[in-house]
Image (cartoon, rainbow, N blue to C red; front, top):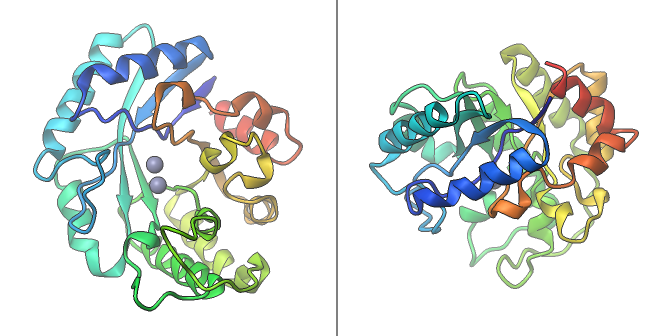
Length: 258
Ligand SMILES: [Zn+2]
Ligand SMILES: [Zn+2]
């Protein structure tokens, strides 16, 4: 059964908006959808975050929605959590609101870096992965979202002016293996996320990139899929293409079959 476990309906800001997400999921034969709005974070006032102090209400609304749709589609309630070593307390606050079905950990390092002193691509990627590695030592998360999202940041030179430098995932191979081993030990899943790939419809931009996916397969990790939809039309993005793909397809099927 198809499942999409990473969506941003902005349930607190616009409760009716989620209806479009659910309708799109049903259209694509998705039997389970998980809401994963962003946790409140003091360094970000992004409009799609759960406002501070409203995480409990978000969870309650999500559960109510799940009841309303029971028998039609399974609705899970999750949350996307930003890991940065200086902000672990904010993750803990969000998680104290109750039991979430899916707890995605994200290294959104672009929210934290020093604009006055921009790192190189290679240093930025390294730090994002180091943060993820620390996150996977904690017992809080069920999956790692968009593991190599820093590849998108490299393309946002106006908003996040990093210093260009060569980037090769293999420089971080040992660190990525360590992340995967931590994840395996905690039963965490690795997310296949087409958010960056969707608009140009180019699977070479999918997270994680192919060689990292293959590495995860050799480490016997389990996978999940999340469109990272910020609008209803993105629910289930690129699912059909991913299912047919020689690398992503088998990983995705192992998730759809569980
Ligand atoms: Zn994210
Ligand atoms: Zn997201």
